[in-house]
Image (tube, rainbow, N blue to C red; front, side, top):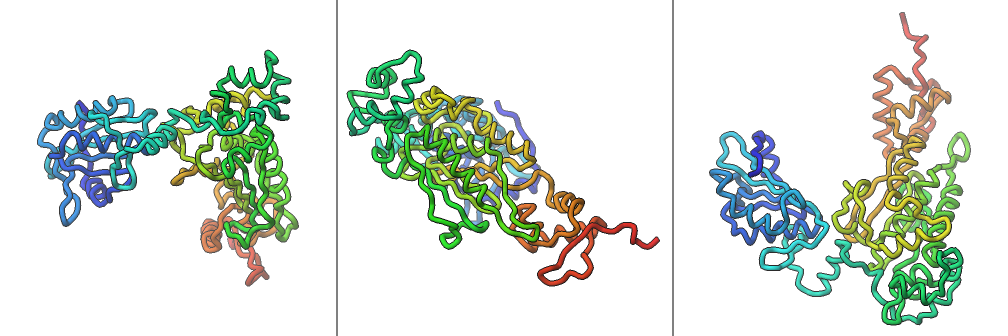
Length: 460
């Protein structure tokens, strides 16, 4: 049986004040085991979540009304075990608090590697605060793809075989292959030709213009903005579109991104200042986006370059059990054909298979920059590479003043990556109170500046 954990009255109040949603669900202790199984199946098939059994909803809100004894929940525990073995996708504990009735069963359900069904074979998925049945074949196919159990890359395309057998991309590839083979023979052996038709992966890898085979699904668009905000009127130039077979596309996209970043200097009092990002980090993140995006989603990869950050957005959610929390430790390839064959090219873009994002994080640290931020949207994954030092903003200001006479608010914001003028002012005020800096005499208005505290001038 699960362990029992005592929580405080304050923790109970915080819990009961929460609203049911995509990641949390409350159930009455008298709930039927089948409904509990449905809730856990839905969580495991979506993004995971927390299920609390023994919390009752009334007109005035949620109330604690737990089991008199943990043994009273045995039927529910058995129903949950039928959905997924505990320890695989589920963990549980009984919560109790002083002066509150009984034990509340807390189930932590994790995003599952596989599709989890209830005892009657039905499948559910959590959507907002609802457990939605997955009924249609289309919905089930989408769920399988999200789990990484099948991939759009293996579906056949209604295009001629010569598109992938008589292209520059396949010829260049096979010149370095061991053993050397004829294009059609090679593609058939690799299951990239099925029933005489190329699959999606074959077109992406070996068609000279895969974008003609898969319109609006396999391009890369690069934008440069003249500020920290994304808006059409802040675009420095028209977006650049990178196309072609994936091997060439990756290197072209990285080169173009580096070129745009190097040109994105901005002017301050010290002259033109360039923002630098590690080439290795950009290469690995762009490669990762191309390799692991969901090609069934009608959208391109978007690379947005701002003064203080770069955003790489790829279509599709994270596959299978991968989350933003475990993405650096867990491995699951949505597109194994692409991963495998790109790694066979000369100078492959994915040299260390499965280590791309880890390499990106390490290269950022080497330049004393903060780690990239990975967020998951409704149907995309966004990696944000910030030009922000690991040092605290206050430390960066002092280090800057060790080499420079003064610093203004605008300069400090560009240095630290802080966008708010008032937030930067508070940091200056904290440094003044700490005796580290002071107002530079003779500066005021837009020229107001700070300098290191001249400690020798302090009165005895």
